Image 1 (cartoon, rainbow, N blue to C red):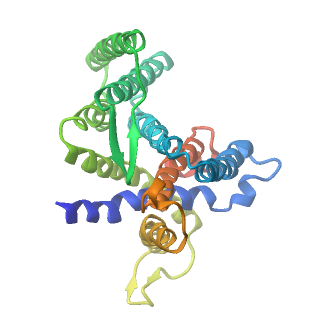
Image 2: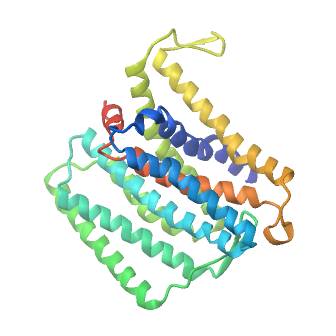
Image 3: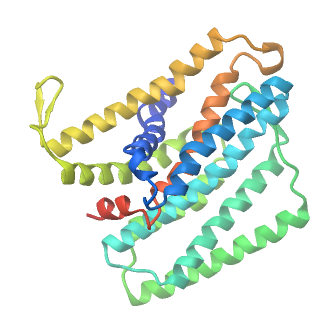
Length: 321
């Protein structure tokens, strides 16, 4: 089972993170030019967030505040859940556009509020369920969520779910629904954020399914973009394999994501943990592994919040083409 999880991580999970870096920082100079659309969002996510993260980790190391550093894992879990439900919602909207089965603005608003309420209630439940646990060698202490906050959130979550189900039933009686998109929406909003508490192994498998959703969108976008930019003869592996230029460029993009995943998730963290001396009696023996993995998860959310915006002209041009 461990070998299977490692294979999924290397071939699916890690590349999905690296693809966001490949897309986000590609031609970063033009994206942050004075007149560029979303310039400040690119600067905040691409420069501001990494700088803040470095300052935060340095402060924790200098002050020997392992507890504060461990709380970065809670921020990661908070944003990962948000990222899951937003991705499910995004896939639903993408398919509704492709199949011309549109949702009205009030319907979209209800779908968003429902997904976000499930995410928030599940995150609160997770903190209430586990007082402490170990993640990447660090002991993580959950945040105390009082009943006065949790119970109203749970009621709102149930109410939003009932309203959403009613809206979808009424809509299905009048027109067709984007079923694959609804499956992605329901899975990311309910299944992933609930069954993860049933058995520890599910917490290892769920990210792979999330990554598969993500890769389907990224590869579609990248193939369309490469078809738009296509040139060359489409050769791969020194000319041993020939394909269309766009497919060749997309395969190179995918392979590069896998290589970068191995480098940033394994090679660099393990090398730093071995080469740089720090207070192991305080931070354990995998401090850099913890810091880098948590940072990539958090940074991934901020980058995606810029990349997949509907007002991003590059995404609008190539995702639906």
